[in-house]
Image 1 (cartoon, rainbow, N blue to C red):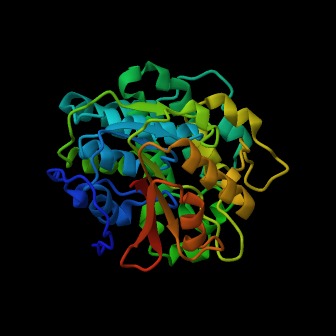
Image 2 (image 1 turned 30 degrees about the horizontal axis):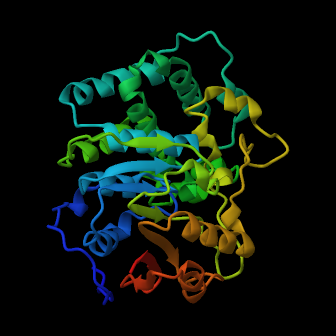
Length: 357
């Protein structure tokens, strides 16, 4: 649990009880699943009803805000992140959905009734998954339209989590199926996870969701805007949570489009036709972030502070970075606003808060 270093005044509010231990697990890189208690403890005291999660990623922080009773606007330019956010913000634990999911998912993955060209089998043989697994993913993509739109995102979310579990290092940045199938894999403790079928991982993920006491739905929103095109976002948002790609100590930055491109194809099947065979990972999208360079990140922070000048801005970052917390504080400092930093007990993750005085 984080220590509270805040010494400024804020409006007191009755605490919302949130069982953080029951949140679903995820292997999405950069997910804040392990520091939810820290985020909750820092943000809970502020008076706000609506919140913008500007880089929603895995969707886990948006889910936390939902459980806090907030009206959530989740945004991310990756289609799969949009699907995850919609699933986590709108799924209500419907028993009828849960009881039929395994049967429906088995049909989608295993019953081969498709006549269209199988784009994953064609473009990704030997890259990420076995031939049998590629075929199952093709079948799912070609038949998922039969699932009611209201719950289709849930199926995409569950299968995406299953795909992550079956990937060495949980990303799609290189052709490394051989890691799973080679001699080293047979000695790896991950072998059981890698060999388990998609449907087993997906149903376990659903069980984790169903174990939660999901908050009643409000009118949440999910968008895929460029997070740096700030005119697309409501200026008067009461709380803006920002978890951008972090620049490391050497100046490098995770390219999320490069790392998770494959999952976007589960949302838009035609994207698999864009597979770039000149690249080892056969990337199907390219969308570098403005936050990937030091100058770009500084410009983005300044723009955030100018645009969202009415409410609270909470920017999540890491100390193991070329961009220092003192620089972020300076960039977020404006007349009539307090800026300060709270660090997690792990001494790496931290939040910079900018709020009206």
